[in-house]
Image (cartoon, rainbow over all chains, first blue to last red; front, side, top):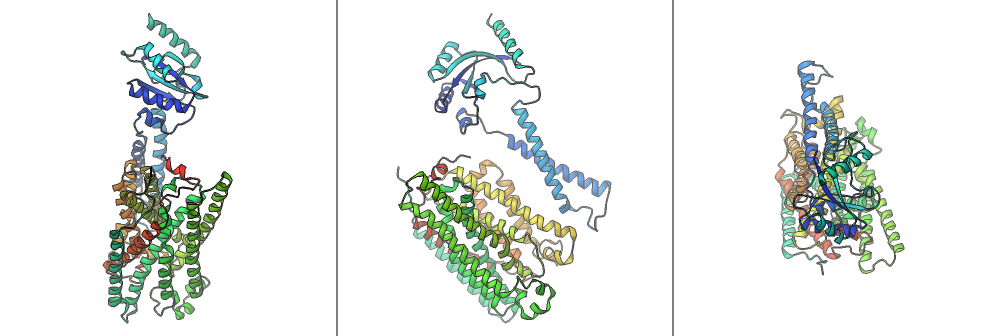
Length: 197
Length: 414
C-alpha cells in the first residue's frame, strides 16, 4: 500500500467540529476521515458520506439463504431421499418455511458481519492507525489527505484557523496492513524521511 | 415563526365524509332489503355478518390508535410528539363506533338468529358437547357484560389519555418536578389502558366476537393475530392522516423522519402479522386433526369446491405480506409520501379483507357472498371515521407544544 501524507487536527468541542468539517468540505479539502470517541448523529451527513450499502448486501445474503434452504430441502426430500411424514406430500412447503426463515437470518447476519468487517477493514492481526490516540479518549480528530496540489503550510494554517489544536503532518500507509503499532510508527518515520529527501 | 396549529375541516372534507356515510347507509339499507329482511336465516346472517365485520374491524383499527399512544407513552418515547394529536383524534372515534358495534354485537347475540353465533342457540347450548364444555366463557351474559365493559373501558381510558394531553395546552408545566410528575401520571394511565387492552383485544375480545363464529374450533393465537392485523391497519390510518395534514400545510414539525418511523411500524407489523398467521396455521397443518383443519380448509385449501375463500386469502396474503415486505423494505420508500400513502391504503384494505375471510366462512361456508355490499358498508364507517376524526382534530391544537418530550420529537432523526 502506498504511503500518503495527511494533516490532522484535534477538536475539543462538537460545536467547533461541525462547522469545521463543513468548511473544510466547502473549501475543497479532501477529508480522509473524522475520528471520534463516540458516534455523532449527523456527522456522516456533514462529511458528505454516502449511505451505506450494507443493507443491500444483507438483502442479497438473505435471499441467498432462503433459496439455499428451499433448494436443498426440495432436492433432498423430493428427489434424493423421499420420506413420508404423516402422509404429507413430499413437497411440503409449510414445514420448510421455519428452516428457510432461519437460513435467511443466518446468511444475512453472518454475511453482514463479515461484510461490515471487510468494509471497516477489521480482522484479526490487522492494525489500523487512527492518527491520534486522543481520538479514543476525549477529542475529535479531523484528518485531511494531502494531494499533489495541497499546500502544506496553508493547510496547517487553515486547520488552526478552524479551531484545531495539535495540528500535525503525518505519513501513513492506507488500507489493510499487518503489524504492531510500536514498530509501525518507526517504519513510517523512516519512510517519511526517505520521502522528504 | 407562526405555525398553523388549528385544524379546520374544509367543506370538501366534511362533504366527502357525509357523502361516504350516505353511500354506506344506502348499502346497508340495500343489504337489509335484499338479505336482512328475508325469512331465510342464512340470508339474515349474511346481513349481520357484514355489519359485524365492518364495525368490529373499524373499531379495532381506531382503538389501535390509542394503543399506539399508550405503548409509546409507556416506552417513554418522544418521537411521536410532533403528530401525537393525530392518533388522539382518531381514538376519539372509539366511543362512536364502539356504540354502534356494541349494539350490533348484542343484537346478534340476543337475536333469534343463531346462524352467526351457533353457541347462542338454546338447544345446541345444552346438547352440543363442545358448547357445554365452553359454556363458562361462551354464554350470553358474559358476552354482553364483557362487551359493554370493554367498549366503555376503552372509551373512558382513551378519554382520560386525551384529557391529560390537552390539560397542558393552556397551562404549561412550571418546573422539572411538575414535568416528571406529569410524565409519571401519563405512564400510569397508559399502563392501565394497556392492561385493559391486553385483557380484551389481545386475548378475550377476538375470541368472543370473532372466533365464536367458528365455535367448535379454537386457537389461542387468534387474538394476537387479530391484534396484529388491527394494529398495522391502525398505524396505516395514522400515517394517512399525517400525510393528509402535511399536504394541507399542517404539522409543520412532522417530517420524513417521523414518516420513516411510521413506515417501519407498518413494515414490522406486517411481518409480525404474517408470522402469527403462519404460527397458527403450521401447527394445525402439521398435526392434521380434522376438527382443527376445518377452519383452514375453507380459507386456504387447494380445491375450489371446499375452499371458496382461497382466492381472497391469497390476494390478502400478497397485499399484507409480500407488498409491505418488498416495497417498504427500502429506506427511501418509507420516506416517500406517495409510496407510504399507497402502502397505507393497501394495508387498510388488505386487513379489511383479512377480517372478511375470518368472518364470512362462518355464515356463508359454500361461496363468497357478493362482496360489493361489504365495500358499501365499509364506506359508511370510513365516512364516520373521517367525520368524527375531523371534528376531534379541530378541537385541540395540532402540536402538544407544552409536553416535556416535544423537543425530542422536533429534533427527531433516524
